Amino acid sequence: MQSKIKSNQMVRKIAHTASIAALYVVLTGVSSAFGLSYSGIQFRLSEMLTILPVFSPFAVTGLTLGCFISNLASPLGIIDIIFGTFSTFISACLTRLLSEIKIKNIPILAPLPPVVMGAVVVGAMLSFLMPEGFSFYAFFASAISVGIGQFVMCYGFGIPLYLFLNKTNIF
Image 1: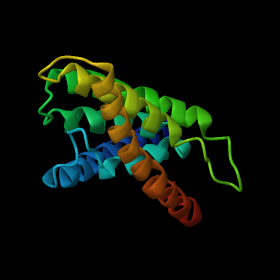
Image 2: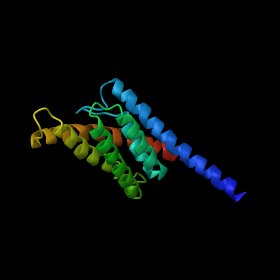
Image 3: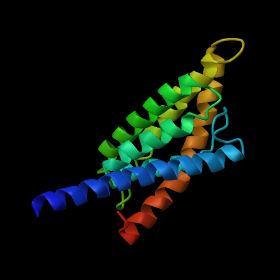
């Protein structure tokens, strides 16, 4: 009996992780259809999901896997697959760590790691891949551009998603 319970729990954890990864991939694909997933101006709908580690540690794996799969389609190639995925993993871990810091029951700092990591890591990737080579101006411009998109998705959509999920007790 105990083995069956553990088996069922493991299946639920895998399904939970896979569902988050699949949703991340689909939402990135929708954003990509509008040219908003892989360029200097990024508004990936999937980034609203970066709030999910507040609810579950399995979201860290789901987001990382979803980002990895999504970045297989990136025009930036292996650099985005490696560094973009690593950025998402670190962001998700930090989001999980900041999940207990709340103001009026809202984890106000939890969306910050994806904003900062996205701005810095993706901004650096984009500036290093410029035809004219890296410059601090290109890095600054790319970081600001990506950071604004991340902020809008993580705070503008992620916090309402948190409020909805918290209210409905889905997690």
